[in-house]
Length: 280
Image (cartoon, rainbow, N blue to C red; front, side, top):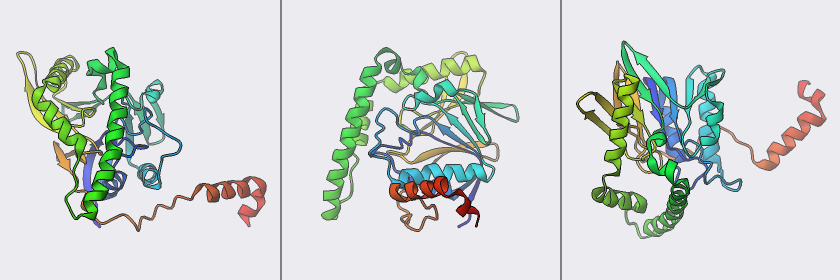
């Protein structure tokens, strides 16, 4: 398969380690592109709902694919989000082709693009983090219920539904929450002297122009890999919001081989106990 050449790809809100993550779709997308830079714009690993008992092979394959991309020379920039905020203490750390930062400014031919997760402008995260975490727990419960319902619908040959997406669409019609968020972005962008701002966090892909009496910016929300399977891509000096189709061939023939716990333990035991045998 011919890879799609892009200068920069920005993806956010993978929420690895949760049942909501569409890891197979993430893996197919990563294998379909050839970027110079891959920007992971927060909430990649979900530490709020992380469990040692749930990190399946499909999620590990995503991590391995990112590592393979770095090995091939792709610059990976990990921007921290609220669900992986434990990494914020590693701001400005660089390890080979991996950089960890809390925000990033991309300059191309005099055009400045400010990329950050977006939670820093979310009042709920700062004023009532417990409420945000409760919402994440409810979201996780809805995901499990949704999986059960869709399994029944599949048996009846009925189209799948996404409960949380429908609820969010309904609530957004009744609320101006995101308009407040966008106003905060507009003010922040003016202070940063940027012409484009890219966020994640809201799980709502957007590509609009924001304007007030002092600033005119392009706001792109690169969406998520739970509901929308969307990304922001930069090619030919232009940003685009793209959607990836989940209806692709199943990734059953992936070359990424991840051993199970027993095999991994035995391999480690052999390497430590019989190091000389490894060189024969």
